[in-house]
Image (cartoon, rainbow, N blue to C red; front, side, top):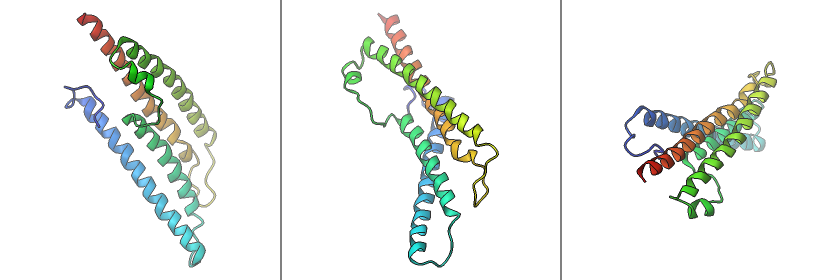
Length: 174
């Protein structure tokens, strides 16, 4: 799904958008694959204790965290998240609809700024800690929060600018 305006599909912005979308999608797919394989292996090892997979719990936690937050950013990018949209649909194409888009985008941007800041704060607080079995740096578990927050903020700013740009275009053509 290309979110950029018509006519700009071959520009640098479209290539960056496609690269971000591909990176988010494949990161989510890989995390989900790792999660399914390891959880199935953990279940099998409980019934047939042929080896110890104590280390797998840490990878499952890490894959789950990254899958959730990167997947959230992907859903945000595609505008496929759960939303109550009867008012925006009723106002679509009108000046009030564009004002609503800008106001909602600014409110969401405020939330995402706090989300990203707190994710960064968790990551900084975890600095120096390691996981017990694999001794991986614990900030890796929290890094998905600011990464997904920044991606969602970028798409929110872009949507807000697009709504403002279409409003100014309508104003100039009248």
